[in-house]
Image (cartoon, rainbow, N blue to C red; front, side, top):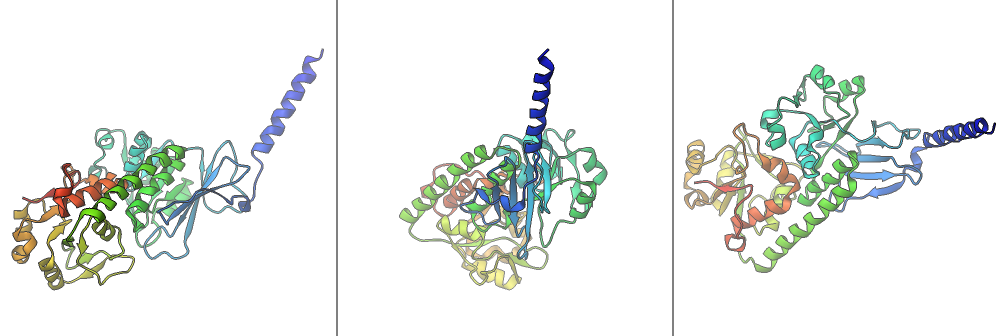
Length: 379
């Protein structure tokens, strides 16, 4: 006789509990910092005291952006986005992801979650072994401006990881029309090598693995700074370092405040080009490039050149420079596949300590016993 009232009471409790779980909150309640990066400047993770959901905030995610902020609400436990939220909404944790940059793939690989990748951009140029051995299962959606949206939709992604170059991705309007959420990952804009690597935590939040992401990242600055300190305490002369080769009619030189310039400095090198202190690379003409190369002791990141002979045939004018004559020319192509996919641009971004170790070996070979990982000497 008493079983029906007890059952009714139970149903009422469940309904009330469900109503509390999905109760709308206000955006102002999301004022608790869940993760504030120590090195990266482009993202932050925030939450609410009364919510399991979080918001990934990304600042100025393309070159030239000012006061631009994008947000991804990661809805957990059946919670709704707060009132007033105008960003993208990811329901649950992204189990099927399309990566428009191979760096994003490397971050998922580091988290041991690369199997979540269902689509990529330019699959032949991805060096990741899981992607290259599962091409039949992973869709190549093409490049921004020439996207195969029919294929993209068929992959049924939970989230698209985007990047912007000189503005917002051209994919934005179509993704909004298709109601497919996206998030900008702006690691390439970070000037700090450790800042680039710290975006690993942003990726880990998207797949509900933030604790793992934080743990994995925490050891990187320790290893990096140990190497940096070793050089500061033992290296004497800093060799002058030239970078890059022409792109079209111009030779782009990184800013003295850039990621690469910082790596060179931390490895005990002296970057030859100090005129540019902006937030982007600037072009110089071939004559100035020749004068700079003539001053250099070492030349690194020499484009498509994989041998010294090829470099000389491509740029014969530079054959008489000191670094070429001495064979002090190195390229980050040791882990490049036959199609041109280069792991330096993938895992190298989240392994700045290993990149630094390679550069120290180039500039101060007596201090590093290990073999090169990303770089190789041109012979």
